[in-house]
Image (tube, rainbow, N blue to C red; front, side, top):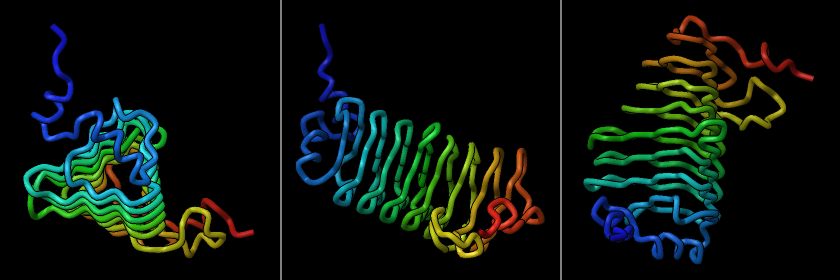
Length: 203
């Protein structure tokens, strides 16, 4: 006997396949509704792009909102289990290996600014602020970090770009200013802060 897949989805708080596909008619770009899991009451802005294999899970009165034009790549999992995850406009999340954002308590808030980039299989748990234009590049596990606002990765002046973490490992309690970058492979340390212009010289 073939199980009712829609019934299984509903039991776990996700939309049916038909209701998931119906989001396309509301301005969401979705390539494969059948591999996409989205909970009820997830706020998706017009023009959000959802690649196959994305999970957007809202439980226990959590808040999950994704801004206009943001792209969610395959392997991205965003969970608001009682907490809050808010993603701004035209952000790019999960290319090169997915990304996980998890706010699993009422006091946890994860904020992702406009035009931020989170790439390469990393994650953010507990409270984190990834500001406008900021970037997380690589499999980095973030906890209680703040990357300051700035221009996006295409801003010509590296000193004006949002804060960046790059490499691989664990980053706890760090603050990266505009134009700054911490690169590490292992444990990220505040003392390793450098200027982005060292990696991207001004022309």
